[in-house]
Length: 113
Image 1 (cartoon, rainbow, N blue to C red):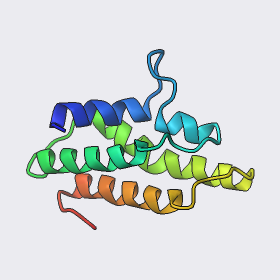
Image 2 (cartoon, one colour):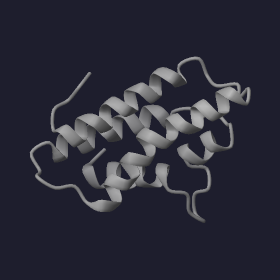
Image 3 (tube, rainbow, N blue to C red):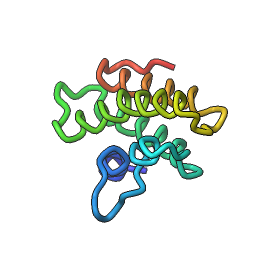
């Protein structure tokens, strides 16, 4: 996966559109589990974005907004779903922590495992 593909994928998973209403965030908001492979692809895309931007002094606004949504709002939707009795996959909580650490790493310029 190259930077352009990774960036586009992350933006598409955070921001719903007419072309893709089945985004990661939309599924969580609806109390649905992610599509199989969706989180794995997001984590890969986050690592690619990190590697591409780690020495960059700036990040574009659309990407920043998407990373924020994936990091913060995914957790909020998860907790709301948990309280409403959503049947989340057992590893989703850990996956959200991994996404959060990856986003933090992108912002910091230092990878946090």
